[in-house]
Amino acid sequence: MTMRWDLVAIHPEDDVAVALTDLPPGSARLRAGEDVAPLDLRGAIALGHKVARRDLKQGAPIRKYGAVIGAATADIAAGEHVHVHNMRSLRARRREDSP
Image (tube, rainbow, N blue to C red; front, side, top):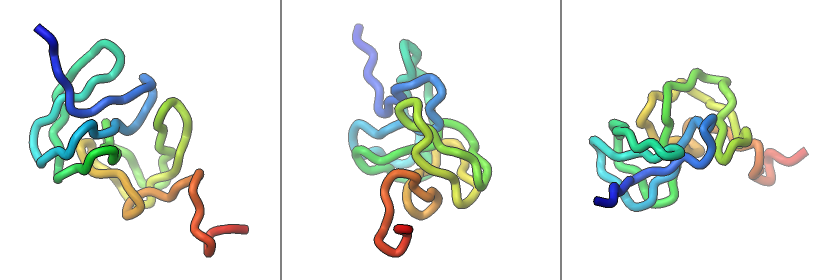
C-alpha cells in the first residue's frame, strides 16, 4: 500500500512544509524524509504555500529547503499558513525594501 501525503518538508531542519494541493483546515499528512505524520492545519492552505511545522516566535528565522528564507514578523503556530502576512522574506524584496 502506498501512503500519500499532503505536505512535504525537503530538509530535516525546515520550519515549513509546502502544500502539494489545495488543503482545507483540519488534519493533513506531512512527509519529512521517510516519515509521514499528521499536522493539524489551522486554516485553508493553497497549493504551493508554506505551513509552519512547529511553533515559531516573532523574529525567529524561517528555514525552507535547509536555508533561511525569512524571519517571522509575528508568533506563528504549528499548522498556520506562513506567507507575507507573518514573514519577512530575506530573498525577495519590494522596491520600497531595496537599499
